[in-house]
Length: 338
Length: 256
Ligand SMILES: Nc1ncnc2c1ncn2[C@@H]1O[C@H](COP(=O)(O)OP(=O)(O)O)[C@@H](O)[C@H]1O
Ligand SMILES: [Mg+2]
Image (cartoon, rainbow over all chains, first blue to last red; front, side):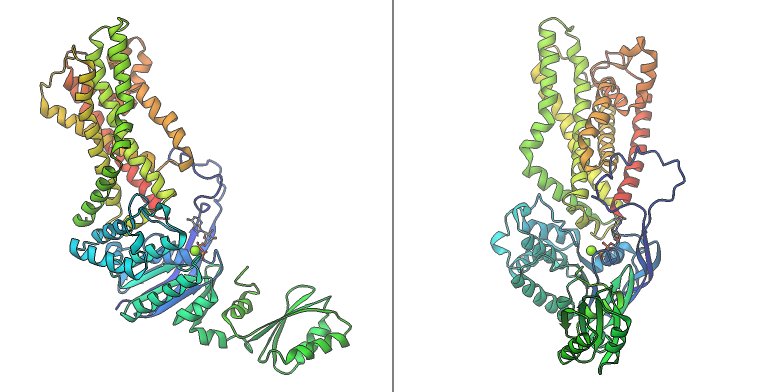
């Protein structure tokens, strides 16, 4: 069994992401810019240290642009870190790329299937790259196509596949050489609920056979349901780390009430803080406030009467139970969904 | 290097080439053969060109088909695989150094270019006959030159394919490939540029010149051509240059 470790990973991109408008052309003929203008720098990772024991399902949870894919990229030899180190088992990812590549299977965030091949051929050729014998390749391809419910389309070119089918095939391909560590970058994005459940089942099953799994998601339910431990990342840093239960328990009080007033005042916020069970109150803007408390519904009438007494209109109360979403909000003041 | 993975990738490319056999065939032969027909048959037949032009033209056409095929076979898939289908990612994750993924593309392109070059000879001969005077006086030298030409075209495909953005493919052909062909001594021998001394020196920077002159020197030595020593030196030099530029660009694309 093989674990994953990173130490203080940093990554700075000096060009905009590929496929952004206005880039490209003949990079190889482009004269180096004479002006000494510093290039625009995007700090994608700002010191990520993780320790994932063998056999764990570990999740990276964070909003778009948090640095999840970059972390996966560094761990899978596809991105060169600016500084810091990453290991798969004892092997330094950057220095021992070939050894590392034998140990890992990767499902990238964006589909990258071979459009000139059929589903079965994709699996079989992938197996051949990893040196599987022809009998073994055929056998495994069949088993995976069956497991991922793709047998009826096995001999069609993947060009015409739906997004969900491509995603299933990508995961099957990553499992084809039976890697010890499986990376899944947003595996369930765009899947219908039924396929998502099939995927969760397959991930758990693969984990039970002793494999380490790192998956990224910006879906809290998925992180909660699937991962044994999680790192919540934002702006390239780990802002919280632990089991889903620990993380949820770390939100002060656990319950979150998002309030909207006509206009609130410092006195009102002070009174809210004094209510029984309230742990923290933060103003989000001139009209809104987030209130963390260890009880939920029973606070609502008390808040309403405080507002009434202070002659402030109360427009909206949004109540949520302890959740990873609340945790993210508590750390960043932003919603994960935004 | 991992022999199994490397061969499996070649196998994949061969499989896809077999599947697309007819379009590849058309793309390789249609244009050169039309050219051969018009210039070698129509123009010569109607007396606008001397009959000897047939023999002079053939090595040039062979160089064009090889270089066109090699560049196309390597550059186009690379551009699409890096930017559109991203399918190269699966090969970059195979257990071997990623440079070998690029080398595999070059090997596959070289083989295709060789096949194209060798098939143009009989096809053109059938179209032009009679009156084509090919003499294979030094078969080994010819084989060596042909191999270097094929390699140069595939290496050029690697360098271009890893340097050009998907949206600029058309520009690549108008700005790089077309001038290379017209100023590549393909339709005329290098010595024909004697009256344009500046141009005659400038075209020496065009690798295709060494390809056409080399094939001319080994297939139709009765015509004036660059010395074989210059041809070897030029081809080896450009091969080394394009391969190293290509590999560097490939690494830049493959690892962010
Ligand atoms: N290849 C790239 N070139 C330049 N910038 C990039 C590249 N990939 C990602 N970025 C930038 O790095 C940051 C982190 O991106 P990413 O790791 O993809 O985040 P996530 O997967 O969490 O959405 C973003 O600001 C993104 O725009
Ligand atoms: Mg991502």
